[in-house]
Image (cartoon, rainbow, N blue to C red; front, side, top):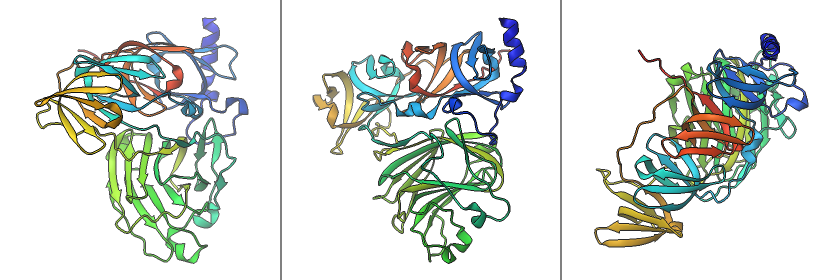
Length: 458
């Protein structure tokens, strides 16, 4: 059996699919898992199991037997976008830990030493207070779109008229869109007035991409000749130029082009993929951009919100081959994952209420939907339903010690955890973390596993 697997593995070169689009894949391969190797190759199929210190077991539809890979050769595993449709039960908050981990769930219990988070993906997780940084209470956001499932419902734009030179089309494969020539694709996603638009980008070459949002036109607009072309309503254009230059422009017909401000992100030169999170508040004329969970820039449009539609358009320009996946549109609650303002010395807990009042003291208990906070004036009982955030006192905790099987796992509903992967089976993922100890997770909770390299010891 092992010899057979070696022979299969030796012939896998023809099965690897890079970022550039190729022939359409059979329907049976749609929404497959994808295995990203450290040399940049990508293989589609199904993850069967992981034994972190020995094997990653993979099933490819063109291989008769499962294929075993060494974990050291794997950089990342992405899971199909349709899992993002899984609905969390009673998620009411996001807990952020001091090490940057973030977990969604419902805050159900706590005392001076621990806090209990109830989750749909791992049951009840007990977290030590010294590991916690903040809690943001968030009402469950409705999802308007989750997962690219094909070209149906999308409009391929007339890129020949918009670009000089040879134009192409976007193609669909395994839950994502691909393009290696100038191409436009658009859809009315019924964007809400306050929206969170997320997607994954991967590219080879120079990233030159324009994303139009809150547009009423499904056809690309040549900005240098916009006033001479067909009528269109206003929209915003987020542009990636030469990979690292990011700009945001409000576009209206018969009005001069203007920029809301540019930003240079040098770290993109060292990457070939990024998770984009764009948050928009139409009433506040506010637009906020995150890359891989990190705030990049916040814009405010002094001219008022120009978006006249509810559609999104992706326009690939000359310079790269590109993959677009894991597109998700949800209602944004207007909060930038920030907790309450803590005292300058960080010595006390701070609870923020929806009324704007802040209570500073020591949280003694969380039970039955109530927070008990010991303040200088005595104990105050606060209904959790009235709280918008908690900033925990800063306490010394144990730093995370990376092991050979350390992974950075991203959740489908947002948030991520760096943890030790003990095993992966189709029915359970067993992990360990200094934040919550040993736990068993539902595999459907994850959108991505990134295998972290451990620096060799001298």
